[in-house]
Length: 119
Image (cartoon, rainbow, N blue to C red; front, side, top):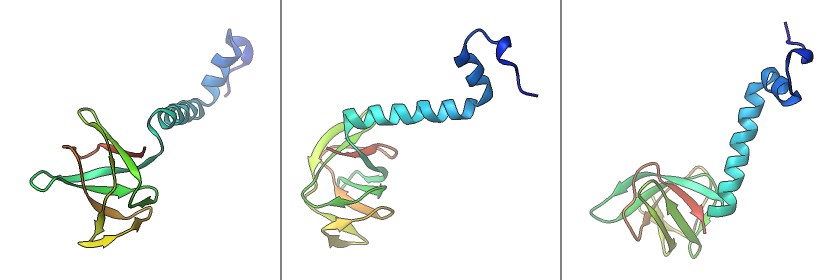
């Protein structure tokens, strides 16, 4: 049984009781939009880091091309760099698409889970 509007002091309170999932989704979407305005568009995340050779493996959620600038951001990481080269399965490529994992020489240390943005 749905609660009646009269039982709630404010319309917002009533609506939150009706569809809490929708409000949570909307709030999450707004936070994501705010982050994109500040950081740029998220294009992937670091899934592995090889410290001896300073290479990060990035699982892409958008396209990335050689020559573009990226920003790697995590709890302890925050740096920007130009993509000079990247590889897929030890083969150099000029462009990688959504869903592919690439190897990229990174300018600084990074950790699994760090997010990658177009700068």
